[in-house]
Length: 246
Image (tube, rainbow, N blue to C red; front, side, top):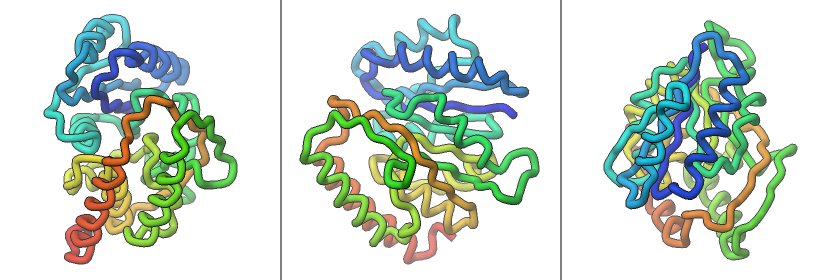
């Protein structure tokens, strides 16, 4: 198996080096038969993010930098998934809020190597199911907004069965990634909802896995992001109504 690890990044100079070393150490320890690649998708950062990644490239096996326009996290993930070559393809946040070693709980559930029974083409991290733990550092209003927004998403999106669509730790099989991401239209915060709905409409099974999540105090998810996501949710609902994801 060849694995692709995709990290969307914007102004991450303070933590990208630590994150990359942690990801590389984990992947190296797994001895994947086909190897692995790490793709940092930099959304036109205004700081030294790209410079740091370039500096680390000779030291970290199969690390590459993909520079894209700053259209949003969803666009960065979209471009990274299309560039990736892995049989398994994961995107994870640049702050490692879900530690890399938790992938051990995801890979056995993914449909790989002709496996079709008791497996899934999308395996996603969740903090809303039994077994998950949260280390919370966020402001109270963000916690409250998060709870309300998850309920709204479940009611409107057509993904009632998925309790947590927004965790930045999602693993896809190659066949699912190649069917889902070319059809993605949402470039910013609502993209998670869209790709999971596309997966459902295309017949790919999705499995939520509990994770230990560290919610950093300096998260970039603002109140404006919640408003933007709600608008995108309505767009996704319209696209689905028009049959664009089937």
